[in-house]
Length: 149
Picture (tube, rainbow, N blue to C red):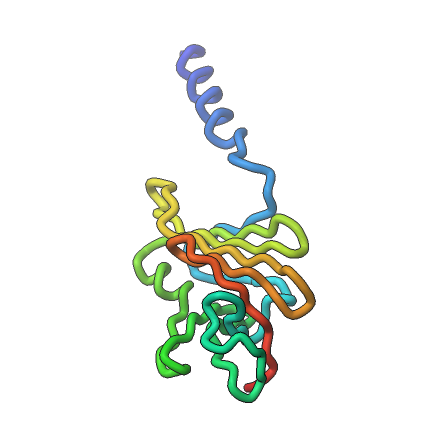
């Protein structure tokens, strides 16, 4: 009897006593996110992927829109808006957010039972109004924050 109790106690400690990492994180199955304040807004592509290298708030096409609770990828001049969190949560994946420091924010979408990452999105602040956005397949974009609504 004592041997069985000892094994149960040891298993419980092993299961709940270990942490995968010490990174601040938020892992939920409800699809709620809390992006940092610097990320909230509308973003346009600059650099090698931009249609026009000049940044003009009147003509710039919004590529990414981040609110306090949602992240949208925007295509075809704003006619297609995809909420990336809803896309993966709708497939039954859980959301894991991590903030590595004041200028990096990451989201992973994970199969709950297997713990496997299905998709990952990384945001890295590179200036007051600029960031690097790495999406699903590792494609990286330089983005600039724009103010048009």
